[in-house]
Image 1 (spheres, rainbow, N blue to C red):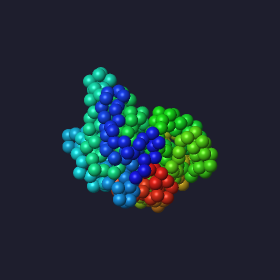
Image 2 (cartoon, one colour):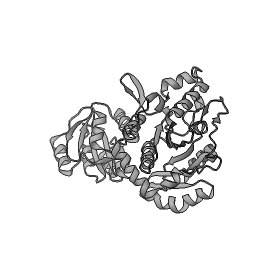
Image 3 (tube, rainbow, N blue to C red):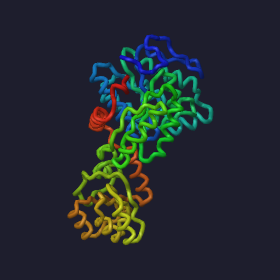
Image 4 (tube, one colour):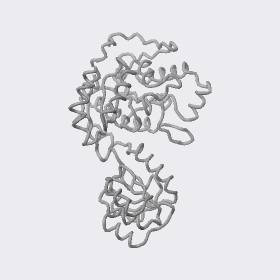
Amino acid sequence: MTDTDSDHDPTDTEPETDTHTGSTASGGDTDALLVSSLEESTGKTAITLALARLAAAEGDSVGYMKPKGTRLQSNVGKTVDEDPLLARELLDLEAEMHDLEPIVYSPTFVEQAIRGREDPAELRERVAEAFDTLAADRDRLFVEGGGRYDVGGIVELADADIAALLDARVLLIAPYEIPADVDDVIAAAETFGDRLAGVVFNDVPDAAYDQLETDVVPFLEGRGIPVHGILPSERELSGVTVAELADELGASTLVDEGRDNYVERFSVGAMGPDSALRHFRRTKDAAVITGGDRAEIHTAALEAPGVRCLILTGGHRPSGAILGQASEKGVPILSVQTDTLTTVERAEDIVRSGRTRDEETVDRMERLLSDHAAVDSILG
């Protein structure tokens, strides 16, 4: 196995000393790759696990850790991150959760840290010890960053700090829509310095793909920032089905037809019917969220080809004529008890963070990486 970081001698097994605290992480001969991201919900988890599985398929023994748990849920009285749970299942790991996720980066933790009740030196020692435990007898350890690469700075454990602590190379996952997005890539590259192994752009829309490939990639590589892949947007990875949305919202389904439709964005029906129709016709793969008593908005939404679902708020039931029209057009109708603003906020959270994380998602990401990224260059 070849280490591509020119500043790191793979024959040197002396542990790196952390300049802040003196804590160390050696990892032996384990190659550590930290997968970081510019934004939340850029597919970082799926890419991390897909790379781990691709490496395992080549015969490497692999491990995983997420030093800062940021995607939190309550589980049997404990707050844990869902991503290490999925990693443990998919990679068949026997590691303990306190090693896979040594720090639960919850709002309460952040408040305590700001008040000086969390010691950065102790936290770094905890991460280093967990890494050494997980890296034992492993060829590779895949380390997943926090929601954004700068999360954790409060306790001196942003992704760049963790990469230095663990002597890890860094793969940066970035979105791309317009050329100005490159500013963020350059800023992150400067933060990681020589540890940056490269960038993978993920969930790139068709309209932006050619410009990214022909203009942006050569520009970045001219600045010494390698680009290892451009992964095109895939509907199954960039949205949720109406059925998933209904489940997450706790909605009643009034029209079943079209529950497999994918929703990527939301449109609020708060205007007059003429304005609504013009607005809805400009959107695609959208769910319209509006009051259940706004019959004229329901009609306008059902006439727009890009509307995939109606979400009616306030617990109101539409007329039989609307239900019949929706059924005929294959547009499902969901009903929720909450008000429109609350429903919009919850729905956007579901689409932003809820791209279903399961084995099927990771399988799809493996295929995308194999087809559109230089996996050998990423793994090094």
